[in-house]
Image 1 (cartoon, rainbow over the protein chains, first blue to last red):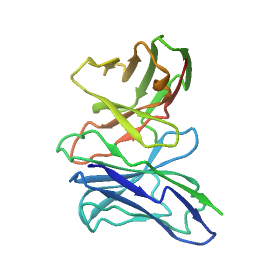
Image 2: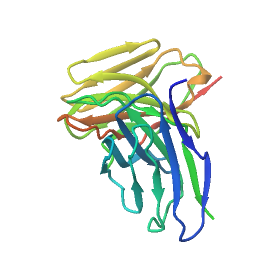
Image 3: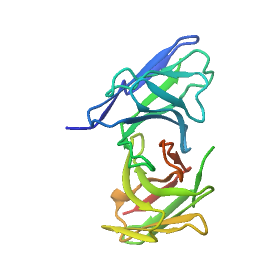
Image 4: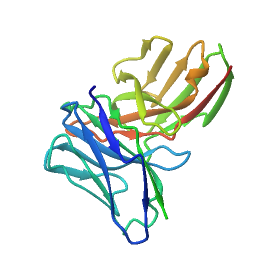
Length: 115
Length: 113
């Protein structure tokens, strides 16, 4: 089945630790995104990437880093600089369309909590 | 910053009734999308309406778009308990070249059997 796989489903971070959230897609989509969702809130864009080896900061990039070495993969690292990392993290992808955007396909999310 | 804001924040209806939720946005858009999220899950795309369209239907869903008022509405007819979820509108910039999709704060819908 084609889709987006996020892992792990639950992740715990200790003080001062960096953690990496995995996102893999087999939809052959060009664009990939990371969103953060806090309880009862909407989604806020962390980073997005239109093409391999290129990515841009979203609205809340501080304390996070990403890489896009392969089309299928867009891992997110939550660094120790992110002081309030507890949230639900969602990865998404879409077919890049010049002049607009297509629908987003989402993974099932990773819940990150601080120990 | 949040581009869209949904209204109401929460809605509780009886099964079989219609549910209407609204979305307002701030800047010119290329198109607007609606998504559903079940608790603790990812979002699922429901429907997309382009800026030159005024109304669109998909099964029990009807979406309207008023670009002069920068608003959209989602109507779910003959609601079912399985429609219980949060609903989000999403917008993208009018100028293309990149896809920065921004989501609203959502409407939490509860359909009582």
